[in-house]
Image (cartoon, rainbow, N blue to C red; front, side, top):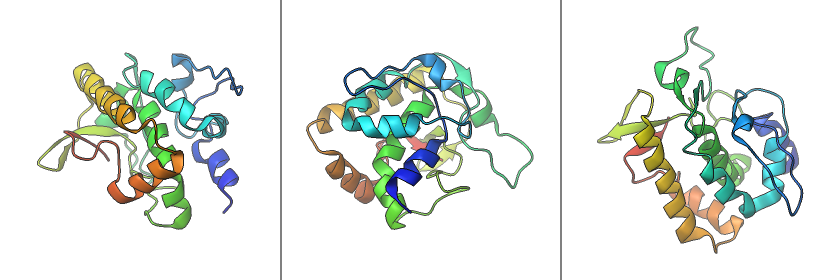
Length: 183
């Protein structure tokens, strides 16, 4: 599948925004939509490349809650950890997806639930000895998650997007090695 097709369909509107080459704009209202809503933010974000990373990181600790992640099509219920979680998880997911796109295209990762879902539920949870604690994050947790992404970006901002994607392919999520994980 061509990269542009995957990108356009990938988020089918995680959020909407006005993007121009020199003036990328996004607000917290853009994180109100569900993962499956229609919009082309992913394409616009992708076109901005690495310039969008610090913008998305800023939204990770957005102090608003909503349902986040993907719904398991084999279940008629929504899970507590996705029902009442922080919207900023969507910004972190968008970062992860930007890093994962080469892995998706090459088939090196198993796609979960649907073509654009790289983590099953698409939600960040705390972990204990590698086991997911399937409860919504606290606001203190979400601030720690943001710090992990900020530290990662500080260490990696001089790398190319290709280099970052190669590293993601080898090491996995930005959260690898932390007290948090994607499920």
